[in-house]
Length: 398
Image (tube, rainbow, N blue to C red; front, side, top):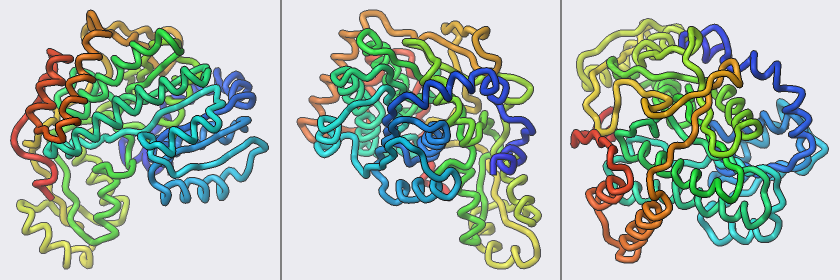
C-alpha cells in the first residue's frame, strides 16, 4: 500500500528509512520495556503510530478513541497483519473530554509515554462557530487536560502531534494547533513534552485524496484545486515520525521533515490525474459541476472519468504550507531526514494563555458566541494570525 501511495504522490523513496536504520535497535529496546497510551489512536495517524509501537512488542499499549468502529478495524487489522504481543494490548471507546475517560485514567494511568493524536483537522469547519468551539476543546483544552493528568500520574513523556498549518496560520484549525503548541511549551516546565509538525497525510480518512477513492466507489466526479500545492507523507511515515519525535525528541522540541529531493510539494490536480489513471481510466476535464455530475453516469463505461479542476477561493487556504517560520531556528544535524525547532513561546505567555482560556470559558458559560468572538480571542493571543476569510467555504462546493 505504501508503494502505491508513493507512486500517486510522485515519490519513489520513503522519507525516514535512513534514520530508522540508525535508531531501530535503540527504539525497539525502549519500546519493549515501556508502557504506552495512544489518544485518538483510531484515526489514520493514530493507527499508524499504534502499529509502529505494537510491532516492537511493548509492555503495555492502550488505545483510546471516540470511534468504536475504527477501533474494531484497528484491532482486526493488527491481528491480521502483526498478530499478538506478550504485553497488555487493549482499546477503549472513550471521549477524552468525558468523565468516563477521567475515571479510566484514575483507575490506572500507569504509562511511560502518552501520545495524543486526537484532533479536529478540517479547514472546512471554518464556517460553523459551534464546531469551531469544539475544535478549540479538542485541539487545545483536551490536550491541556491530558497533559495535567499525565503530570499527576508520573508519566515520563508526553507527545502531541501538530501540523504545518500551525506555521503562520491563516485558518482557525492552524491557529488552534499553534495555540496548542504554546500550551505544550508552558506545560513542558513540569513534564517532558515533544511534538511534530508535518505535511498532509496522503489518503488519510476524510482527506481530499481519500475522497478520490470514495468518488470512484460511488461513481461520482473527482474534484480538486489546480492552484494548491502541499507536501505529502504516507500514513506509515506519519507513524514513524511521531514515534521518533516521541522517543527521541527532547523537551520543548518540535520535529519536522526536512525538505529534500525526496520531499517536494505536489498539486492536488496532479495527484487526481495519477489516481484516475491508476484505476484504469483516462481523466476527462469538465468545466462545470453540472457537467461533471451528468457525465459520471456515462463516461466510466467509455474508460474515462469526469474531473473538475478549479482555482481555490475558499476560506483559510494557503497556496503553500511551510514547516517553520522565518523566526524559528532549525537544527539539522541530529537526524538525516528530520529537522528540529524549539517551540517559540510568546512573551508573558502564562498570563496570555490564562486570559485566552478565561475568555473562551466566558463564552461557554453564556452558551452564546459567533465566529467573530472566537476570531477576536485568538487574535488577542496570536497578534500575527492572518485569517484568510473569503466568505466561501469548502462545504459550499462539490
